[in-house]
Image (cartoon, rainbow, N blue to C red; front, side):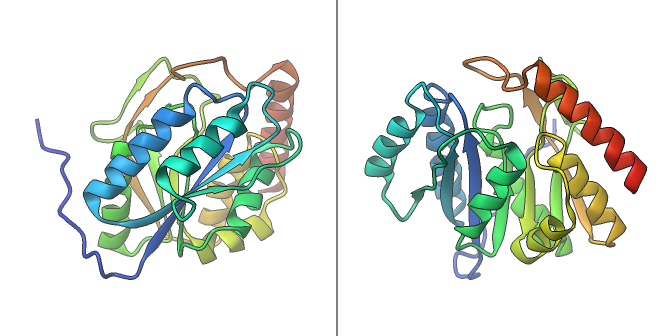
Length: 227
């Protein structure tokens, strides 16, 4: 089996990667995902920050995030909470406004995407100077474990590209990420792909309730009708 190891990057490249982590009832998953992000960014040598956007989780997720900030430092863990659940798309927009990196990584906090793949995303972007890099389960060694069609994707964007795409997007919920990739292709942005494995959430239950599934379906219909 081919090795997935990446070459060690140039620490002085000047690039910084802002990871956006929207959370809602993720107190059990958050410590592990943050630890893994710190581990793999530390090993690869890339400059980074983790922005936690909690939407008023009743399970104490924000309190856990505050403890993690004490452990890893305010320069690495930024807390940008909101009072209530306002939608995944708006969470990413909110987090992006506070990002100091020139690259943005969006991913779940539920460990459906393993942070070990992030160095590969960064290397892929550098190889082709891609505007964005998306994880895929349809190429190479990508796999799926407990994954369904509602699962979101991990992506890396040039910050300026993401800002441009956000201006074009009308979706606010779970269809937001799908619309982003459609708009990116319309605008002729270059897209790289990295095969990754998707794993169903470790703790807790899916965020998609019945109403959100209906909204997701409606969003898809609107997206197909307007693109």
